[in-house]
Figure 1 (cartoon, rainbow, N blue to C red):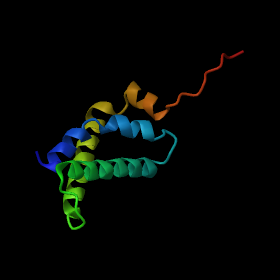
Figure 2 (cartoon, one colour):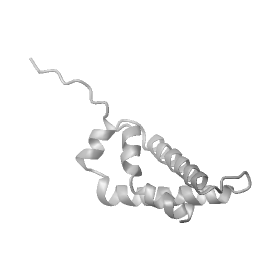
Figure 3 (cartoon, rainbow, N blue to C red):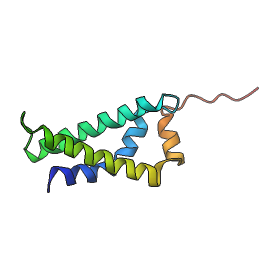
Figure 4 (tube, one colour):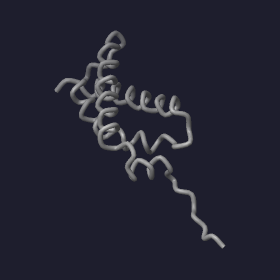
Length: 101
């Protein structure tokens, strides 16, 4: 299996991780940076698992990262955005809720 295909498969599950790392009150550019960093980490990991991680092979890493980012973005926009799971993960850990007196 190619690193790009493996990265795309992992990208399907990345919205869970990205929503856990981001925060709802942070600017969208910061959350986009988190998504990009996670995608780059997945790209490096998938190329490393395939045994193709060498200094001159940067293009494969970026292609794998792009495949992961594209898959994660599609899954997020189609099925995950606006769900209760996304909201709960973005607010994790949940602050304690004290009863109103």
